Length: 304
Image (cartoon, rainbow, N blue to C red; front, side, top):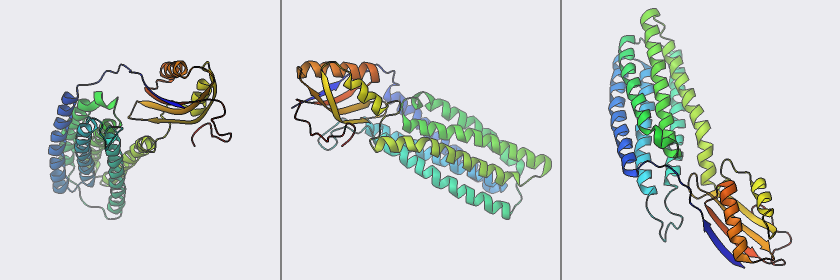
């Protein structure tokens, strides 16, 4: 038996890590400043929707802090303790952020329902002014991290949070305007519940992807049966078993498999590596080459 670890490079356009860190740091600073202003305005005006938006904005700032730390940890080189490297620190951070968001959203649902049962007076003009400022800040923050969100689940979660904040600010402006014009205070808890629902929707959309990667699930866009069939069709292959698909880091699919052949192992490994890279974008392939008879008759084709 022989093992082969094949690596094939992709050319990705990445933002300079240090420049990216500076953008995240600026986003953290303006989000924290906005959060303080919103909480004060919410207390003074009596607006639960404003406080709800502030709490959500605080969660965004904290998620950016976690994202910032995770980005720096992820760039550490692999060592004897972490032989696969530290890249998944960003996925752990994303999972923490999604979990925190879910808890905050459920708290907002509770508070919104309570406010419907026990309504209080709301000062609409303060809501509109501060929410308008928040909208500008939320949009600016989202634009700061938009480029990095395309290649990082961690930053993407932070970007979606800021986008949700921007929409939440629009909702708060609408609520404040309706309170000013028609004294519809019921709109305030309704907007609060809408913001909570929107947060939960983002959690539902993003968390499973993060959990799947941490659980070594098959990368999105790859079908295990399709990969198996393709590998079995490579010249010289007699059989494939114990096939595993996962992502070493986000966007870096990997394959581990036992390959049975009667041909030259070195040629087969090179041929299989090129096939996996060109057909499925696999950057890391670990192939154990075996001779007929070495494979147990009941070996599973996929998994163990």
